[in-house]
Length: 187
Image 1 (spheres, rainbow, N blue to C red):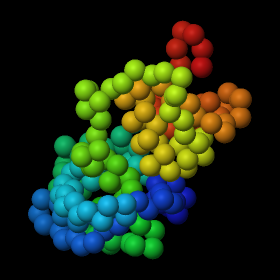
Image 2: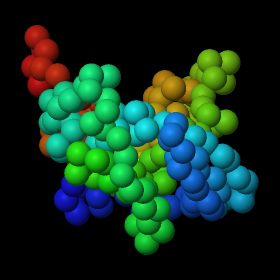
Image 3: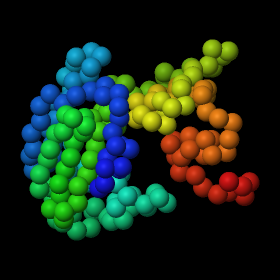
């Protein structure tokens, strides 16, 4: 893992912090604290889930393919060391195969925070008052991306303000949400 990958995955907003943590055979038990509510949430992050969700270029190719299968040869994906790095607001795992994974606290919180997940009955019809987000927030932070996905799930539409009217910025926004695929209708 290089520094560029680490900074790309970290979020500058730091909406959560780690109060305490411990390792076990099953995974890492982490006490997250929200900076907004000061509420504690204890979660267990299973080892296999963590290794499977590593987003570095060694594990995850540009075509969205995994470079390995965690279900085959799981014994080589054992953890060796865990560092909770409050300077970068992230969790660093050194695996026994000499691979390092980095997970920002905000990214983990966004993946695991079920109390804020969108239920089907929370959907609402959109009107003239459409939700909107800043383009840079969606592109640069995991929290901005999460808000966009929540708006799309609840309302079905969201204005993204501040992007240039160009194919490149539209593609960058779409790649932030999902993987671009060529179709019969073009790029």
